Image 1 (spheres, one colour):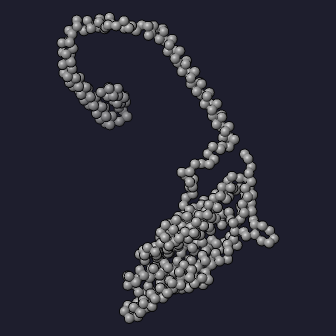
Image 2: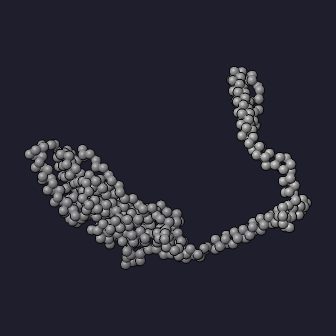
Image 3: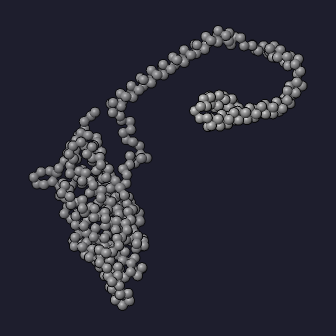
Length: 410
């Protein structure tokens, strides 16, 4: 095979004044496929980033692209070591690919939460969706801090992910507090509102951005809701405010998942290299053609031998010469002889008489068969009874073996 070197530069290495970026050159089509798939996943995230998230179409397209990118990164994570067969660049390490897949999935769930808020879905649904986004960002935050990959990211990546984890935990608590308000569980509502305010403040502190994900607006809304809840509790309900640790866990709604890597990204497009085949494939095709011709030739010879044998048999029986020749016209003499024999035996009247007798003959034969079946059945029952009575002492051949042929013909 032709050895074509393919060079890949680490996506996260910006280089330095002392040297260029980390790179790896390998003469392997598998390595090139890995790198191309990485670029497709990266491009999918960029397409998602450019979408107008205020529109329904933009949200759906961005969500689809992020799940697709997560699926590609997940597939590469499982295959990259086997395809490259040597130490890859840091961006193609399984740990790094796992982080990227988790990050894309968390962002896809984030878009689901945004759509739920935009569509004014029920508070319990939004709470579950936001809770799952919290779980996904928490997982990203954990894997991003592993020793093997923590130096790859820009310093603000971790702070933003950490801030979003707190934000969506806070949103989950905030919307669950509204569920509590509807159920008149004012004590739990106050506890969740207080906790969500702590989380919103943690979001702003961790990320260094007061408006991350609209956090400042959520702080205002939570403060207003907390003020109203405390007022109602002081004047009406007088419920005890439970500790946050004692609150019931909020359910999770996992909507997104990594898209399975397709065999072809554009299934309806013509394959560019469909006609190209490696040398060993061409050799295999040539060997197949030779083998096919041999087998076809062998079968043709067998057919010719069979034809010759049949011709010899026909010649020995004087066929087809022995068949009566009617090319001269008129009724063949043999047919006239057979007609005369029928007339002599009684003609059409005799044939009609025989036909009329058929129903009676049929009934008689049916009665005989029915009686034979009855006798066979009685014999089989008698044999079974005696065999059960005498056991091993009854050494006679079983009835079904003796009368099997009769029963089958009956």
